[in-house]
Each structure stands twice: as structure tokens, then as C-alpha cells.
Image (cartoon, rainbow, N blue to C red; front, side, top):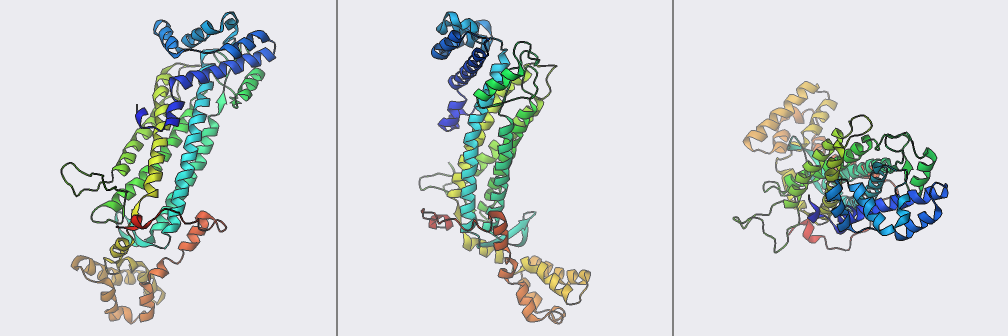
Length: 449
């Protein structure tokens, strides 16, 4: 378990105390609804509402004997309520309480994660605009491709997080269901109408149909969505890890004056936060697999899913909360080195503009095959010999004889390559949304030391 890492809010949600308090809220809601329907004496419902309580140690003491957590809970509450407790848990089976309460716990956890996602999106948006026009090389297969801007990269991450927000909103809403349909889901003791009323009292919808449990496809989809969020964070931090490599050094996670990178090498500045997030993403993804395995239960219910969910639901929500918090701080305090980005972009002597030169040759009557051969010959020569691609091209009369010198120079124009960045930002952030206000924090350190 990773409870020691979580922020207090999430840790409180998955505590035993809050779990049983939520069970109690479900029991009281059921009793009061049944009292209104005339199935439970009103004085009993009043007594339960006013007196119902529990002692956590007493529940644990009883459970050690009876080996059933719900019976231990109801017994501990009954000891405090007194004679009216015979109406406590009336007409219910254990999972009417457990599954419905779990939906409420997940709702509480989801509210925190939803806020975390919005904060990450805001930081990505602000930093995207901050570096909208900061040129760097784009890479495919880890190799230099064509120019982009660092803001463009951040805008891509922002757009993905917005999709995560939409996916998570749907998944969390799909989990906001309860059930009071009894031991096999047929309402042998209550009615669908009473179920709807109890769920409404708790702020939930009633599952259209259930067995003894709410069907676990919902939980699998929820855990899968958490895994996708973890994948997004893994993607972002893997990229930053590459950009922080000594040979690249275009961006770097925050490193404080007192921080140490290695016990043996004082010069080290390791991307430890990025590596931690990437590592924890593996745990969240594996938990999703366990959620998939929980969908297939025997007949109307077995408990093979129960022990699994006691781990994967608290851990996955806690991990994603923690990872989002760390990722937001990571992006907010990220050191950016524009000069290094430009130096790396220019390090190949213009090779990144080969695609535009190819198109210019085609536009001036050269077949694509011949044009590709002409450009590639100079590109490979520049690559293997460490020569300047621009100089090789402008010295080739076969090329200058076809394409005017002014057109060739335009092919090597960085602004031409990046002329549509503003349009991309308008699509990502909206025409009316525009640039966010400048942050009050000093961003000089983030740009480089």
C-alpha cells in the first residue's frame, strides 16, 4: 500500500473510519426511506438516525470472531442503538450496503482527481503559451525531423489531458450508481421504487439491473480510465526524461540548491520525479488488468473481486492523485533552455529543412524520385562527414539551376516552417480563449541558469 505518499484528503476517504461512516450513511438512508413507506416504524428510524454510531475497535473485535465485516459492523451499531436496532439493515443484503457505499467513496475520490486534472490542464496551458514561439527540433524515431516549438509540444499534452478529463468525467458518472435489489437482484424483500428512493436520498442513480452486486464492467472502465490518465503522465515524463539527457539538455525538472543527485557522483541532476511517475504508471496499468479480471464472477456473485478491490481502488485513485499532483508541480517548475533548443535545431546545418527543399524541386519540374535523390545525396554527405547541408545545397548547380536562390533560402526559413503554430493554438485553446495572464512567479530560472 502507498498510503504514506497520499495527500490527506485521499487518505481520509479510504480510511476504515470513513468507509464505515459511509456504510452508516447508506444504512440510515435506507431505514428512513423504508420508514416513510411504512415498512419500518418511524420511532425506530428516528432512534437509528439519532443514535447510530460505532467504535472502530469494536467492529474489528467482532469481525475477528465472526469473520464477516458487515455483520461485525451491524452488530457494533446495534449495541449502541439498543432495541430499535432490530430494524437496522432491514430488508438488505450485505452488498446493498457495501456496493452502494463504495460508489459514494469513489465519488469522493473522483472529485479530488477531477480537480487535479483541471489544475494540470491549466499549468500546461499557461506554459504552452509561454513557449508558443520557442523553436526546437521535432523528433521521430528519436532522430531530428522538422522544427516545432516547445509550446506546440505542451499544447499537445494539454489537448490529451482535456480528453482525459472528458473520459474521466464519463467514467466517474458511470460509477455513481447504487443497488438495494437483494441477495440475487430480484427485489425479493424491497421494490425497485424503494431502491430508487434510497439511491436518490444518497445522490446516486439506481442500477437498472443488478445481481447481488453492481456489475463490475463499470469498475473495469473506471480503472481503465485511471490507467489511461497514468499513461498520459508516463508519456509526458518520458519525454522530459529524454529532453533532460546530458546530450540533449533542452529541459530539466526542478533541482533545488540543497538537492543531491547521486551518492557517488556529485555532478548528477537526475530526473527522479519523472522516473517515479513513469514507474507508478506501471502499477496503475496493472491494477486495471486486475479490474478486467473482476468482471467475470460466478453466477449472481462470488467474492473473488472483493479482496482485489480493497487494494486496487484505494491504490489506483491514490496513485493517480499523487501522480497528477507531482506532474503539475513538475510542469510548473520545469527549467526550459531555449538557447540549447535552438543550438540542437541548428546542429545539423539545415538538414531539418530537407523536406521543404524536396517539395520546391518538385514544384520546379523535377520528378519526385529525382528530387529525393538529389536532396538525400547532400543530406547523407552532410550527415556522414559533419558538413553543412545548406552550404552543400547552395553549391550544387543542379539544384540552383532549377530552384531560384531566393526560393532555396525560403526553404531554410524557420518562420515559414512554423507559420501555422498560431492556427494550431487557436484550434487547441479556442479563438476567443486567447493567451492566459502572465504568472506572478519569476520564470527566469525555468528558462535556464
